[in-house]
Amino acid sequence: MDNKLKVFSNLFWRFFERCGAQVVSFIVTIVLARILEPELYGLTSKVAVITSILLVFVDSGMANALIQKKDPDDLDFSSVFYFNVSFCLLLYIGLFFLAPTISNLYHEPSLTPVMRVLGLTVVVAGVKNVQQAYVSKTLQFKRFFFATLGGTLFSAVLGISMAYMGFGVWALVAQQLSNVTVNTVILWLTVGWKPKKMFSFQRLKGLLSYGWKLLASSLLDTVYLKIYPLIIGVKYSNSDLAFFERGNSMPNLIVENINYSIDSVLLPVLSSEQDHKAQVRDMTRRAIKISSYIMMPLMAGLAACAEPVVRLLLTDKWLPCVPFLQVFCIVYAFYPLHTANLNAIKAMGRSDVFLKLEIIKKTVETLVLLVTMRYGVFAMALGQLFSGVLSQLINAWPNRKLLDYRYLQQLKDMAPSILLSAFMGFCVSGILRFGLNDILTLIIQILSGIAIYAGLSVVFKVDSFRYILSIIKKLFSNRKENA
Image: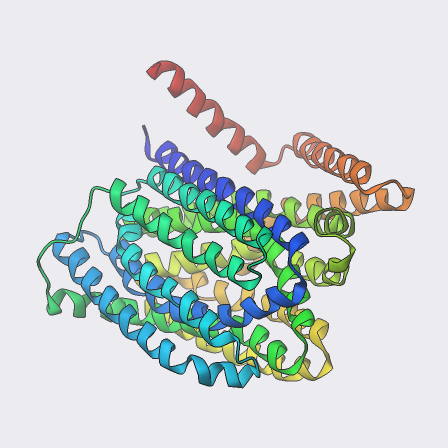
């Protein structure tokens, strides 16, 4: 299998894994949202603010350093493993004792036991992290499929069962904790690598010199994103927080499937070509074109269908999240630009540039937050949209020199997807005016959206459309030859 097919095959498995997991998670979310009140989601969102920040220490920095390194061996992987597990235990101990103080900040004493139990995800993630890095480095993404789907299915059954039995917020806690635990167990049993009885401070030091900058960058990014639910949770009601988070989570569900799949495959592939500037530029350009071709219509379509989707799936009690959903669809539509540019910078070994970008972005974004927070929750969402546009420019800026690939060139590559998606979204949104029932409206919207986008892609001979078709044909022909 040539390199292009190998990349696409791994991307397919990563995407298939994310889709399978997210479809199940989506169904679980719908069921739980119908059973539980928005206030309970607001409660767990407050805990998620803290655990998400702690998970940055697990998921960022060292794992990326292992993936970026040209020839990591067992000593590298084992050293990072023991370091990660020890550090995660210290983080959890700190969270355990600080839980009452954090609960008082929210004026929610009942958060203390929830935080202490849900915080165990940090320890479990520390065990899983190096296994994930090994799978990514060796491009064995098929392993992720079985681990992720197993954890998702088990946690789905457990969470829904507990919700029906009246466990309330503990149903959400059990679902999240069991998901990461089962995922980790399956990955541990199926991946060939296991930690060896070896450790090197010298190797760890070398990896830290690259990884700490990415860790600091991710920490800045996560703290900034989680400061929104933190402020809303303190300043506004649990319902306001639930509507904000639900509006964000629905488009994020789609973006995670596509963007996370591309992100996890792109970094190791680009890293393998880090000494060849032209190769990295060509792959970055192709990543932007393909991912935006897929992402843009999905976000435009979801924004156009937002009201009937929410009413049909979540019931009328969740309708206040519709404006938030539409704003976040626009924010996430441009994520391929961020992902490709940042992965290129990381792959070239420039974690110093990556950190500088985050400091600049978070300074600007914090100023936007300070201005918008006094005008309400929806103003804060619009502030994220404004910040997202500025972040595109900032993330693309270094690659004008590193790769000779400027922001205007990137927008030009995305232009067909942007224009076709905007036209498709405009046409699809007009169907709402017919006043049909929600199910019929959605069916017509989805079918017409697909027909319009695919039809225009053929008429205008869109490069990304033809590229995807050619890869699919090659994959099928290879399968026939191997059969």
